[in-house]
Image 1 (cartoon, helix red, strand yellow):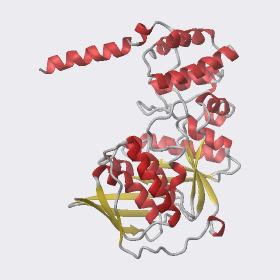
Image 2: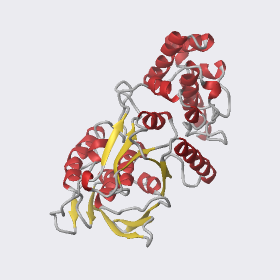
Image 3: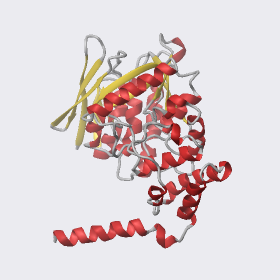
Image 4: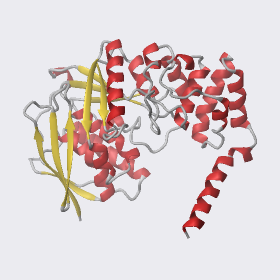
Length: 382
């Protein structure tokens, strides 16, 4: 039987670093969080959330010191079947609490000493939209080193730190930067695409009780949703009596998010969407995600004001987007609709119409080349 034992959990004297040993059968992993801006609070909610998906994947029994709060446990009972519906081979986790099963009383949000409200902020379209829409409520931007940008990419992390600080100063918000190896630890056991939502929740609980609400920006809409760790049904279930998670922007299409982002000069000077080949300009301007975002911005006539792409948008690059899957075609259709309404770029409008509605055999050309290249490589290896 696979087992995970969480602990010991150690907190630094100044409260800004937390380390935990995760014992998987006979192997050990070190999990750490470091936050120079804000003290961290180790609690059962954080570590149960962070390790739930790995335990489900490994079919492991989990032992930890104390049980989480009643509201968190109630949500946990709904969260695990949700993941099982996507991954039938995942099993519910059996938890063993070393402390008594009856938890102490929990302070409600209204009774807590802190009333800060955060948003997990990556600098992308989704998190910028949530910040701009809820800026009167949000007090702090929370940026996690090691989440989207790997810990070893020190130069990119430094540039993003400067970017987040500039955005926060513009809106008179605080900044909470957390460095953690949780992604590397998690990916040894479970796919990050499914586990990242739980990782956000676990990190958020470390900021309680000073924070009472945290926004999680939606990545998808009802038309584009896929099995994904951050989900409109899942995210609120990670809440406790002390901390509420809000999944924000699920019903809003990307074109409407871009419409709001395009009204902010600081957003256009700070936008970071590239995960493939980030450069000094924050975005490569060549990968599929960069191109989709640049098309969105051009549709609203603001791409020339966006200073974070290393290469310009060209029609030749746009035609590379033949063969995108149906879900991503929806993004292009949204951009085409805006172009048809605003008439900002007739050439781009024509190209998107050909990509979306052109001959089907053309749409599969990139896929055909990929398959041919794979067959050639396989023959050469043999």
